[in-house]
Length: 472
Image (cartoon, helix red, strand yellow):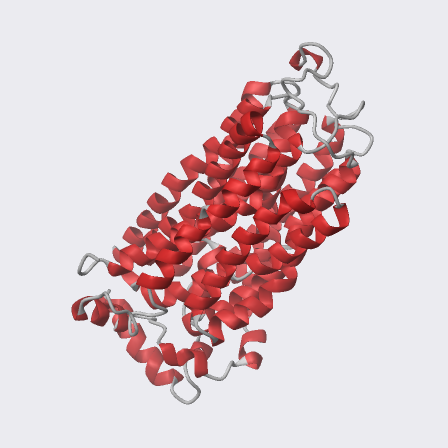
């Protein structure tokens, strides 16, 4: 390994892990279009000019399963039910045990369970169980990343590397959506799950043999770089796993509760676009499977570029004393909440303007992706020593939208897709995003909280760390 660059390589491995987990999370949202049988009333008739002849086979693939729209929504959303159930335990495990092994288990289990989907899909109940377990095993991803950020990323580079690491979520979504459409069209829907499930095993081998849980334990690293990481402001040491969790201080902390509500409400738009955009593009805007995949993946590709740039800009502004870490996080929360809400309102009421709707949907995802340099890394801001536990707590209600929205869309569209029915879902997302913005602006914080430090040492630690922060 390159001397002095191990922390960068580690961050790239985390980026790839995010690519894997998010890719396996969303592939069924695209693939399910080709898994189900066509129904007489499935597409919107609000804009007949989008249709060539009836339900053109170029836009609707014929699959083997006769699932209702409610059942289709459940197949997608049951994953997030497992994700929700597993979030707090996995966050606790990430904080209290070897984080490397927790992440390895997460990625390996996801790959294996994904390859099981074609084998069990004919039995809907068994498929739902497999999807639920996959969600549970995926829940460790974000808590683990937050813990490892505290170990492997220095404070001065934090927002930039958070942007790069979380760019993996966008890149994984891009690759998953694009390849799902292409593979399904040419090789069948089963091949999507076999190919996507097998490739992560390569990452597992590399990560197991060449990377360790912390810089203190890493073999392939220079002493100079190890010292840089260990002495960084807010560094999380291996001993933090043995520290007593200050539950009372956490649950009486105003910034913590602001983060809980921001996570709960501020994830609505992201999960809505992540899980339901392919369906909306197919049934309302009437894009065929190839065009659907290409258009849906474009904003995530842009997002993979813009998020690191946004993170770099936020770091630069903080280093120049233009704003604090708190203001930096609030800027990102504003970007993820307000512009997407405006775009969704416009989409709802411009009628059958497919080009404008498509552009605004793309822009919505691009700006909504700022959640990853906003509230989804705020846990590490508040308490690096308990970042996994905080992510487990805050992202448990934060996953509700991912579970609710696919099921809600499935139930609403049972009698057919229409713009009027989709508007109901759009308004739910808009209200949630605006509330998240208001809450975080009023009560959110980017400062390390006193309860992050060992009991009896918080004042000394706080003074020392504040001096380091000022020097940074």
